[in-house]
Length: 252
Image 1: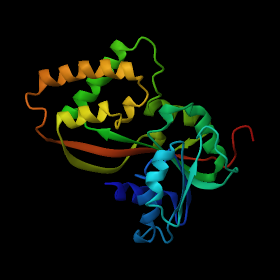
Image 2 (image 1 turned 180 degrees about the vertical axis):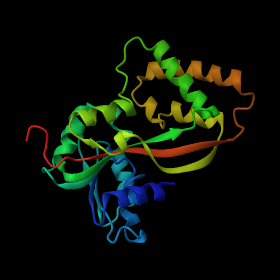
Image 3 (image 1 turned 180 degrees about the horizontal axis):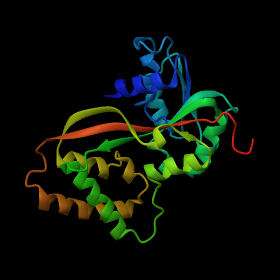
Image 4 (image 1 turned 135 degrees about the vertical axis):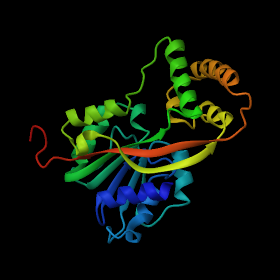
């Protein structure tokens, strides 16, 4: 479903937009955004994307798929080296929980031109599905077992932060659905995703805590599903909140 995510971002950012993605990773968002371009009736020119990530390994993986209008920068997203008003839009997906989010959001308001847009995106999994039940059990296990850990700011907290910093929420900051799809997953696949840290929520956990959390989660899954390898349909969405950068910056 990545192409449809890219189409949504490219269309809302505008024709020929210069877009910054912080935490570009292996290009799940950047690549389809770059390629959306002229295929869209509302976008007459493709987007230019600048992707920043601290991981050299991820950037190496993406470099082999690089396109002419995708530029990659290795760096700390809390210390971005770009001028004010350098971009028409910025995108953040599953990265701000790893850093001081207020610092990054304030910097994005500086780097995106007045009238430009900032997208805060995330993946949504149907909470009524077995995958949703496993995610809830995971979060409860972390709460129960963590002796001290700084829990990441969730989607609502990020929306609140960006609004406090001066971003103007579109649709009152309510999340919009870019794309919805069905996928077949088994309980074991969800467990393996959390265990291997493919799931963004497990990135911040220390190894020892993750091991103890997974022990509890494995027991939870065994109690609830007799066949952990049996696939079931799960509804997923990519959702985003959109903010407009004000014409007059706070304090300006």
